Length: 466
Ligand code: ARG
Image 1 (cartoon, rainbow, N blue to C red):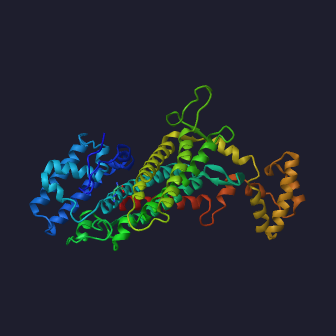
Image 2: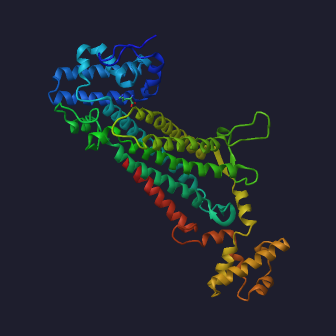
């Protein structure tokens, strides 16, 4: 079977069917159809406004394009490989519907500026949705944090017990990350929000088009100042994939923690039935599939970022067919980020519960209050480094005798250093250890309450802004 010719009379022979399939993007760029129609409607309106076509012709084109939208929504528009891509598919159908006037739609533009317009319209929409998801994700973290200001959890460095924390403080760290992600996407949005429509194939057009008008109809904040740049710039896609990768860095870190916390070794959370799965052979198991999948899916988004960078490297101006390869990466990254954010938000909201008794036990059974002993002496005038060395010795003695710091008698403390008094016990109690870290950004309960309030206010204003 050979393909009907889509292009000009320059071609005598039809495309080889395998090449037609290889060349076609309709299999994936159908995802852009609504944006392609919207972009074409704006282009048609601009052609009519500038008198390049008549007002009646403009109306016929718009009506035909809207009809295609309806057909698509009704499942009646399913172009095959012979259409090559979404742009040809729409133009062909438009000409079937509207007759010869349909052939006027492509006046003063090219598929090169068209596809750039479509992908930007698509990504603008997706960025808005992802930003909304980032706010929901923050909202759930804040809800949990509110109930756990005074719940303690071991804090780690090098995955070794370091100093105990307010659980809310730990969760608020992820709120900060998600807030940066939200801000970052807001910044990137500005660079997605630039219209290439009317840049033509590469050099602009001989028609008296009004690029600012079509950009305005499409709600673009700016228009590309250089036609070559307009049709071949994909910085915005790279930036988006960078931001998507960072979102997944954050989600994968949280995922890893949840996976550890759910293990029997940690036992800090229990997974509820709605978000975990069983094993087909080991009846006792409950697996943290959601965070594991998020951790796993992170890799493919990093891959898309790398792929897009390599796609662009050394690409001469202006449009090259290589650029057709931007779309699947973008679509898959968008789908993956949205899926991961949704799943993690649900997991946090209803898929896991913190085991407060186990957490309390965990913070009481270690030496994560050792810094506080050194701080105690330093407050009494002992130089910190000297105090630090002394406490190191105390910990070693305790380890040898199987004791914790709280098990030492006052005599033992005083034999170690005369400055120890009875209030040492209070100074090393986990709750007090956490409460005392009230420096700005620290885990002290008063600080955490203030940080919670700040994050809630920020979330509310972000919500009202978007
Ligand atoms: N399907 C093409 C793409 O995705 C549309 C632009 C085609 N332009 C061209 N000069 N062949 O990039």
